[in-house]
Length: 235
Image 1 (spheres, rainbow, N blue to C red):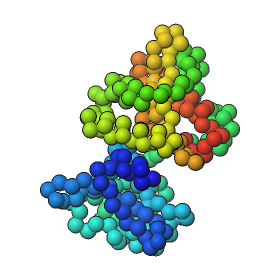
Image 2 (image 1 turned 180 degrees about the vertical axis):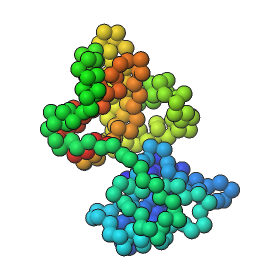
Image 3 (image 1 turned 45 degrees about the vertical axis):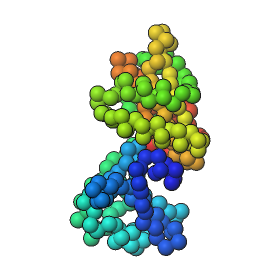
């Protein structure tokens, strides 16, 4: 979505095939009048996007129009896109993305959990509340910063980008902000945000209290319970 790119990119251009048959966004920053094409924060996959599967010929046409003199061209294409061998000079590297099929029955999804996940959920789930929607976006960001800053080192600009994106997603009715707590201590254990469209829900931004056993797994488990049957894929 263009509003998403506007939120996470300083600037962006695009390669557009014919009359919008396909489009490849090209986020960039400018330094000393030079363009550096880089993957923006909170943006995992950049296309190329099309209403129909992109053919090898269309992909080659798009790749032939990548900026030739860019000082940096570091972009993540979308899952399912295979770079033809003639473009190996781009040094493409495959990456793994975890997805769960939400069209399955909930019991089938849970039966496929790893045995240690099943054990932890059985042992600790009764300690946690259900999901509660959060209205104050800044509360989620502050919790994330408190729990993860030493690890992720997002910096002030990164958190400003997060806030801008979250406000845009909220305005476009594509975001769900949540939290849950330890029932015994009444302390918040996890706070986060997922973004979604018609088919997919993406676990984009979340933090848990690491001192709470089973919190991470219960976090994912609760999100699956919430969106199962309403979306096709949990990403």
